[in-house]
Every structure is written in C-alpha cells, then in structure tokens.
Amino acid sequence: MLTRCTARGLPSARGLAAVAERRRAAEFLQLFDGDAPDGGGSSTYTYILADGGAAVIIDPVLEQVDRDLAALSASGLTLTLAVNTHCHADHITGTGELKRRLPGLRSAIARAAGAKADVLLEAGEEIGFGQRRLRVLETPGHTDGCLSFYDPSLGAVFTGDALLIGGCGRTDFQGGSSERLYRSVHEQLFTLPDETTVYPAHGSRRGTLFSYSEWYSRGHVFGRYPPLYSSPLVSTQCSGEAVFIPTAGTRLQGEAELHHRRREGRHE
Figure (spheres, rainbow, N blue to C red):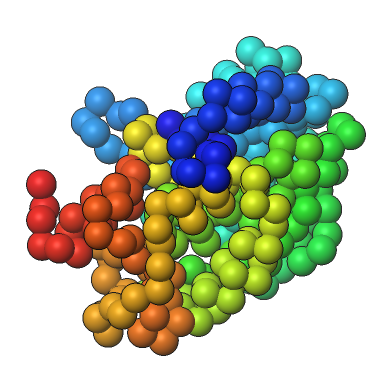
C-alpha cells in the first residue's frame, strides 16, 4: 500500500501513522470490486465517508450493493447521498438499487454528465454530511462530466478515473479528451496541497492510494508517446503527443504496472 512519502520518496512511519489516524477519525471505508471467485469484477474502489452517523458513498457498484449495505449497517451509519464521479463505461452504478432499498436516499452526479440524479453538481459546490464537507472539482477528460471530490478533513481527494496510480483514465470513450484531461489534472488536482492523498476509482490491492510526493518521487516526466495514445491498454495523461510516462527503472503499482509492461510488448 502506498501512502504519504518523505521528500526522498520513501514512506515515513509518521506518515503511515497519520493516514491511519485520519482514517479512524474520519470514519472512512475503501471497498474493492474484484474478489469474485471467477476472478471477475471491475477493479473499482467504492468509498464510504461518514461523520456523526451520516454517510456518503462514492462510486457504488451494482454487484456490491449487499456488501455496501452490510458495511453501513455494521458501522451504524445512515446513508444520505450516493454520488458518482462520472457515468461509468466499465460497470453499472449501484445507485439505483441503493435508492430502491433505502427510501429517502438521494443521488448526485455532475450536471455536465447529462444523467438523471436528485442533485446535479457543479464546480465549487460542497457536499455536506455531519460536520464534514467535500469540495466538488470538475475534472473532465476521461469523459464529459467527470468530478473529483476534495476532503480537507482527511487531506484526500477522490479522483474517479481522472487520476489513477501512475497514470490517468483512457480518453477514447465518448466525450473523452486528452487535452481536457491534462488541464483537469494539472489545474484542478495538482494544485491541491502536496501532502494530499489520492484515492482513485481503480487500482489493485498492490496499490490502493498514493500521494503527490509519491508521484513526483517516482520520476514521472513528460515524454513522447505514439499517436495511438487512446489504446485501451494504456493509462494516458496527454496533451497533444506529450504524456506523463515513467522514467527507466521506475516501478509502477497495480494496473499501471500492467499497462507499462504491455506498452513494452510484455504481456506476462
């Protein structure tokens, strides 16, 4: 698991303890859709954030609704809002089923997504639950209407598919734009405090989060990339032909590592 790093790029004991403490204090759950016996699943992370008994769920997956409801019940939490970072192409959201089983639950998504929801979100708005607030950031590029959510109390941002572990979401879906994704990452996400912890919508149990200092310390640099940057095997963060790629010897985590191997023609 990646966590806050020192200036040299190595995890610090203080950083590990700080993240653990903030998780306990903030009532935080990170749940993974990838444990099916047949190896299936969307490799999606769902997040439950709570304060004072009120909870918000981010990116619920239809097949995991029973799991999510059990987690809420075990924690004594009342779910007040189900929010999606974007209209997902790789799984069906569990929001509708959650609303069916929890009367009074509200749904939320970006106004720009063009989807139906009880709350249509725009940049600069806040989602409140208990005494906590999530700041809404517009981060389009993977698709139209992508949102990220910044939690100052946790020192974390939930980036959906805009920013992944060592890369970004693909841009060949409807409404995708490498140029817009580049601007979203640099102007909305990389302007958050350096100590911000990033929780993406996809990854691997080998890597569930990272910090901006982790990103910088692992040597991600601008480089040239082939024109077919929208290959489904590639996590891209592009502006024209420029894309963040790892320097030689850099080890990526989780799915990003698999993408890197496939870029080099290694499919193991």
